[in-house]
Length: 609
Image 1 (tube, rainbow, N blue to C red):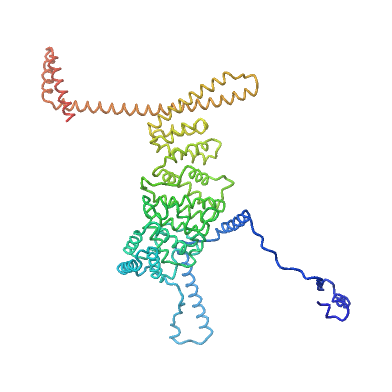
Image 2: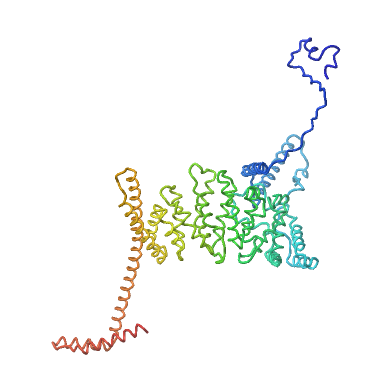
């Protein structure tokens, strides 16, 4: 204690006597009479709710910082950065040489011609890997011979072989810390597997394809957890480049994923997002670029599986990024555009994950309110709106009866004057698309079933059908309009009966009557519109039938005239009767009738032949 250094009094007395201010003095610690326990108590155990709240805050912090994380699928920006660094170092070396030349004595010619030294650790750009077909085949045979009946070890030995051969690639061409927003997803399918020859790729893919689905799933899990950033349940994959493992993963996704008709390790794209880190029930932000890359590789031979993966695992990412305007959502939208462009001839037995609920999420996502829309996210929303027809085409792939049946109850309430115009127009066009393809009448039956609860929306939709009657199936449309017309007739009669019984003396009842009269007016207009649609179909069929009949008669007349003119007997009879008529003699009508009868028979025989 400081007071022990003074003969009399305390430190405060010593300083005060010598004119020091009290605020510059040091307060003495109070003397502790007893020992005090200063150790911390036991750590309090968090409840389940507190743990969930703590994890939620941590995940939200990571997702908010997702915009600051940039990824590159091709490494182009990294190469440009290295080139700029090299040019800058050369210019600095040249300027330093000029400065030293001016300030010092002239050097010898040998020293002047000496080139700047290149650092020994400079990365080397490699465009191919020396893996010959014969050598690879021999190594694969050796692996099978040494590790018979051990498929997991055989696949791991293959991974070791790839990583050893790709070790000469000093740069990781698949990933860097910058995102290639301006780069098309088509470029993602090239490197690093493109460093191998086509024969080696075919040999390796055929060798991998002989393993069972369980072994392939375990091996695929190992590759993703090791090589891909954000891979695995803990998201610690991709800590090292592992270019060889990425090339092997690329071969598996492009050539060993199946066409959707047989079981696969990714379950037709539904399980692909489960191989990377999850946060709050969706793919974590740091794992999204890896999933984008794997989804693009999968589309090489199975675009349906790739689209299933997008709608199941990447659509929630776009929904989350809507309010942030992040680059991940834009890159996901660009991948969707690329995948839909590749969707041409999908297998008839293919199954999709897009249902009515998913379509409703996409429509509402692409048409946000004016206050919710973020200027940074306009590009993503524009891509979704422009690709809506492709999304509908994918939704109707294969067995889509459930989708056709759920469209009307979900979107008919939106097709009303109370909704925003853009959302109303999109929903109306979506329903019209399903009605144009409704050859089995599934969507039309749902419209007949639900039209009474949404009279205003039904009327708007029927006006649209009236304008595009020729584009819809006639049989389904006529049957549906007849049922709607009959239902409206019954409803109108019921309303008229209720109105006639109402006592209009009281004001409240007058308002109730007015409401029913408005409903009667809507029902009557729907009935007249349905009748107009049926009448338009009938008139079009009648017009086409008359045209075909007229064309047939005209064709028969020309054929008959041609046969008569070419028939010698008819021409001879015509000449003889003309001469008799010119001399004033009476014509023999029996001869004329018999001649024309024979001519007509010969004409019909000619037409039939």
